[in-house]
Image (cartoon, rainbow, N blue to C red):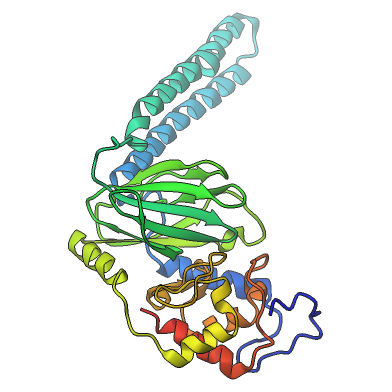
Length: 343
């Protein structure tokens, strides 16, 4: 099933599902389109208190930097125009004050202000405070997301999308399974590194409903740029209803599930309530409700799901999922339809 020994020339091609080798523009264009339609993703468009402090700090630093730049340029211009010996002393004083003392004082002030603001940018919550707890693990090149109950036990698992209630702090436990990643939702807060062997805490709060784009902000391999995720902020009541619905069992298409299992997909992926219990790849329970495919790389359509199944490495270089282009076209289509209908 892994088909590791087949060369590119010997791999059968699937008509209607696979096209010729993707050129760079065919990979970049969907990313550009997705980034423009997947919600806000600018640190200067804050949607939470942590991001608001980051944006405020940016503008304060910007003003300070402009003042220092003007002072240094003014000192250089003044000194260059005073050539005679009588003005050398005055020019020296201008350079000292505008080129050294003033920048030093401003930089120290900006550093002090940034340190003073740090607790608001990285709020630390007491252990006994009731918050929504979510564990996110960065893997090449996707995000494993687990929702935890009050006791810290896993309620269920999903991938590449996070939901949080508006107005309530969400506490993230950030981990890495392979290399260093970095979790960043620009509109909700600053970035936090995810380091193998460590758990780094991060608390984010959304002030308004919306879908916010997140990215990996630490280079982690070939498809680093294709490792996005979304955070959807909804009303608290809607969020609670979604949590309850995710934990309820739902009927599945028996024929589609059989095709999925017979082709070995359940060895790497899990679907709650079925024999598919793999832990290597993303959990596919309720896969059909996701907005994008392959961590924000493709639109979530049956055609694109089938393309990814046939040859994931062609779309997302370096991905660990093997290609399944050797399967009959009907099987690939059945699996794609089955996954799209998982709610």
